[in-house]
Image (cartoon, rainbow, N blue to C red):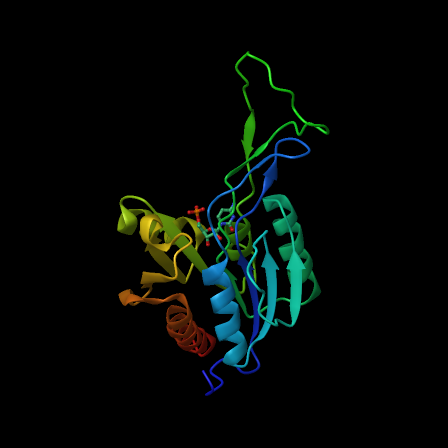
Length: 221
Ligand code: C5P
């Protein structure tokens, strides 16, 4: 992306999974690798954007973004996103993180001991970071992801509407999570666009182009 389609544009991104502690050594997480998010951050940088990346735990090498914030839990991720937005509102927010839906109500400070009794964990919902940002009075241009195991289109369209997103990117969990290649389906005001299966790096470049075009269009509205 040497043509600088994002020159002068400030991009905030979230990537990776979140980790919700249960006790001192255990937690709830998911199989998101951070690959897609990091590939997008790199593609945005290559396109000339200034990139702030808020990432959950991932073993991958992080691209050389302008600002990197590492977090563990969804609530920490929300705190970091809010801090960045309060400092200087980004032009574009791309929410790639696979944010855990719930966290444990009580986190044991030590290690929970094993017994022969059943153990019940009480969970409570996490805040929806993307939805909060997209509903701000002067929201940045927001891009969401939806990874689904069934009813991809129906769920994607519902998420786009509920979260108030100009662009939602959908893919199949079975295909995308942790893998190097994925097909993407984009939903925006113009309808549906399919990005045929390719490496996450190529998909990231295609997606950055699409986002840059949509962003330029809405700016001139
Ligand atoms: O609802 P679902 O988790 O499938 O929505 C996916 C989109 O919403 C992703 O873009 C994800 O980063 C974002 N999200 C979020 N905070 C949550 C849950 C999802 O930002 N608590």
